[in-house]
Length: 72
Image (tube, rainbow, N blue to C red; front, side, top):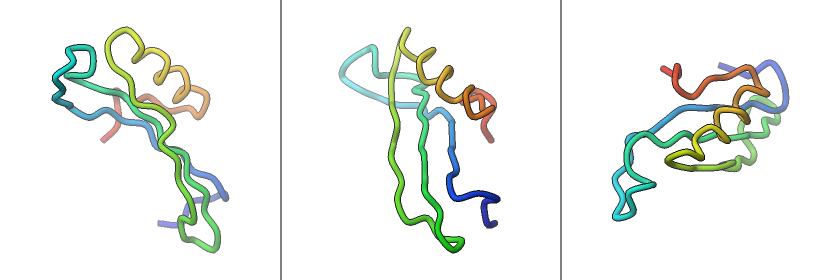
């Protein structure tokens, strides 16, 4: 699938394990990618957080109309 624009964002959660309790469980993340000629030329992992900071990622995703908790 070719994205309709030159930038695409993905938001989702992963089930993480960490020796630090705040970073275990569902971790929300956002990835912003640049697309040129139908190919991803660069991508940046915007943020991975845990605990109460998950709302920060959810708000960043919302600016793109995305919800990390409803990703499939």
